Length: 286
Image (cartoon, rainbow, N blue to C red; front, side, top):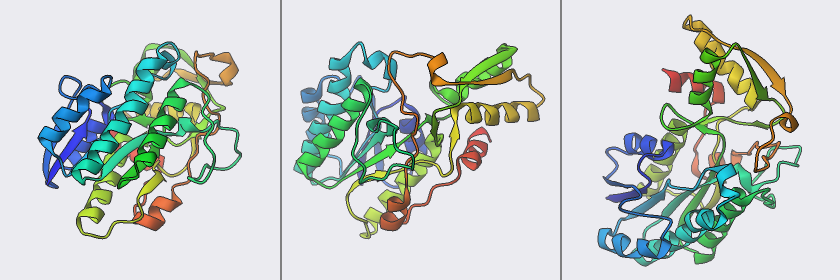
């Protein structure tokens, strides 16, 4: 089976390359071959390659930067997924697409379910929601997988930033009033493999939108504490951590205070179960 992975150097794309090995012929294409900033230019290479499964792991994820370049964010996060969905239908191929907790405003007291009404706070969230809506409107076979707080041992992410800063600084202030589930890219990739295997076996669940995050919850401060504990266990220096509210760390884009996603539908429909975020962090650091 021919599997196309859009995205080459991203955290999830790299994890997918490792996890999906053996399931088919993988084509992992980066910006030089599939430029999502030029959506209409995607059609020709997609038709030439003619994959049997398309996985879109590419996105404009610079949340603050998106506020100053909305056209680019919408091209990559909304227009390109529409084209991918249209070409997937033309090829008779399912589309797996990753979205985000940022489609919600974070005002809900409980974890968000797929039935909750999105209300993004910024350009990034609005562009990702527009991408979801565009895929759904094409009405092919698709999985939209909303995840949150993605990290890995590659690229730019909270884990790597904290590992560096905690060893460089004597004291570090970290936001403590935003709550969610840190989700390892390896967890996302392993879950995606389970979904693909169910589909390959002819036993897919319902197509549509699902939440896919690690189990449990913490704040960015709690995540930083966990990273610090692993540094200390290795005898490495670790800064003193101080919790602060979001108001003391202003950013161009507002963040949802509640990023918790209820993943029970994924378990029920596709029998995919996610690990606790603390165990996934241990697995990642190993």
